[in-house]
Amino acid sequence: MEESPKLTARQLQVLDLVQSAIARTGAPPTRAEIATELGFRSANAAEDHLQALARKGVIELVGGTSRGIRLKGDKLRALNLSRNRQLLLPLPGVAQLSLPLVGRVAAGSPILALEHIDKTYMVEASIFARRPDYLLTVRGMSMRDAGIMDGDLLAVRKAKDARNGQIVVARLDDEVTVKRLRHIGTRIELLPENPDFEPIVVSRRTHTFEIEGLAVGLIRNNMML
View: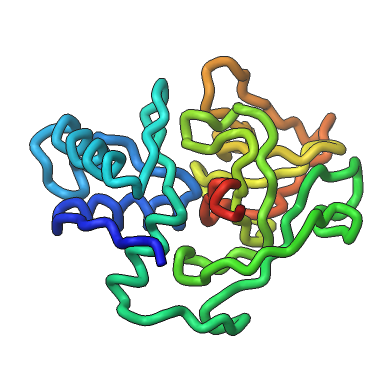
């Protein structure tokens, strides 16, 4: 069994905050958000704890982005087993979820159509604050600064509506995209989290637009290997 990393109480608080933020919004928190939430005097204190967690192997820090924090699955599983002092039962619906992995989506067809399902994964239910319905393979780097990278698996809960600022899976005409939703009056924008990409302004007069789901978590692809 993987040896459990030894974390201080403060490091556990930071790690729990990162995990809960990813489960709740689909993106990790910024250093400033961690500092505010945990009462640190500055974002530098949050950075020090993140660096310590990275050295202990439970997270990976990605340079060039304020939300560049990625969870390391093997160490987290060992840590959770140590903290819980029990093995998760491999029972679907009790400790694990059976989630279909959606690859490339064909134009105009349902996102969960059989031909779009690459495989099915058994995933620990406890890592999600809200139960997802499927995993979506992320393509491209338009959401890089939200910590969502090409090849990551985005956990998605089926939904037809979303609040301003949530990360959504949306269908625009014949393409499915992952973006942050912004409402300005009757205007709808799909915002990237990468300055190399332009926001998408949705006009219902010229576009077919529909929300397919909400991001409720993020899994690094190599956690599934």
